[in-house]
Length: 540
Image 1 (cartoon, rainbow, N blue to C red):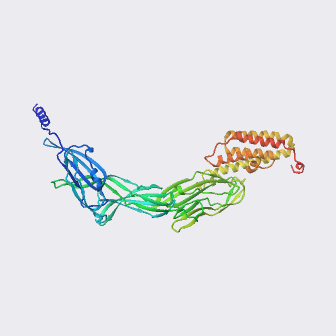
Image 2 (cartoon, helix red, strand yellow; image 1 turned 30 degrees about the vertical axis):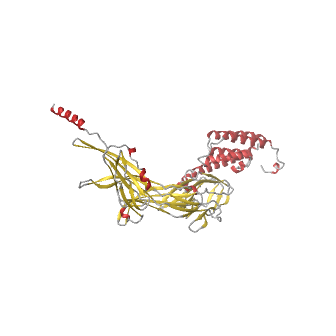
Image 3 (cartoon, rainbow, N blue to C red; image 1 turned 120 degrees about the horizontal axis):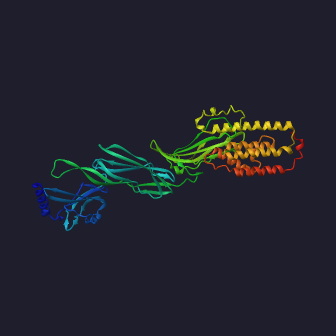
């Protein structure tokens, strides 16, 4: 009961004696004096009351200073029922000139602060160890060509603990600006003082000749400064705003040299590489995967040209979409373009895959050069009829070949069966001496039924086998896919579609209806042709 009365009395007394707060004092101070021209210092304004943010007018500072970010903090202390409120502003100021500058008196509710005389010296007149935070920047070159990648590096030096902050990229017009990789965190000793260094790199690629103006990277944030309490023997960390900016830079951009020929690519090193299975002989219908990689140092990936891969007649190519990427290796920017394609020989013979050349301009030697892949000779033989030579288990010796050896072995076996069936059918025809006029409809019906059944499966290998069986029966001799495709443009189109479906994962489904229509049209045309006058001279 006694404690309840005492608490009620204390609250009543606190209510009665609580003073009416009013601003009575406005105090200003700076964190350094002398200061350096163009470098930010902190102006602190303290008011002994709770004041709204907009009550402080800093327009008088604009005459001699660049006014940066302003932060506001409020606090309340109660000691022996005595409540004290405080509002603190921290304003970043950068002197515009050297000499004696006056920070004028600031006024709130007719309460004014005292003016401050600030001594401003020229940049570089004070040693670097006096600085707690500063920025340095560098360019890989101050003269570059259109499309050439220039590296802009920024280093933020911190001798104090960073609480929070933002490092902003420089402003530049007429060029592409991108950050390269992640920030690095290290330490350096400058004039005997150890600094924490945060480094960031940017790539700059100019779109047109002229002069590029970079404003310089900027930092804005808060750091912890060791400060001592007034009248006390202990120190504490105080949060203070900081702002810094790197010196501006310029880059001279040169136009493309008039003596250069080809698609423009500027670099200091360009290389072409190829991933190719080292084999001397390839069978018809055996697909080969060809990987070609274009590497360029200090070049943006969008500047890499598309590769032109030529092939002789007798080959078909099914390319994939090229892949582009950029990475940093040993502090060098490297761009890469990878082109993967499956090439399939369609006719036997000796062929030469032509040389691949990519022109580029070496800005170090000021000359045009070429990255090349030499020409390659390939011997293509007819598909083997020996199933042992195309055993799928032997094809798996090279893991990188994927499913192609299995598909090739399957097609070879199916082709062997085709030959055996054709030889058997031809033997029966000769033995029974059946006239062509009576046997042709039966062969046509049987072949078409097999082709219909193969089309229903949708399997490219089955359709190719049935197609070759049918036309071999019709012509009375083995027919390759090239021979069948030569019978009509419609057949050639559909056969190409079947091959794309078999060798390219991204191909469209086989249009079996169109294939059957093309086969029927060719069959009708062959049956309506008059017998040749030389047919009696040909052996049966």
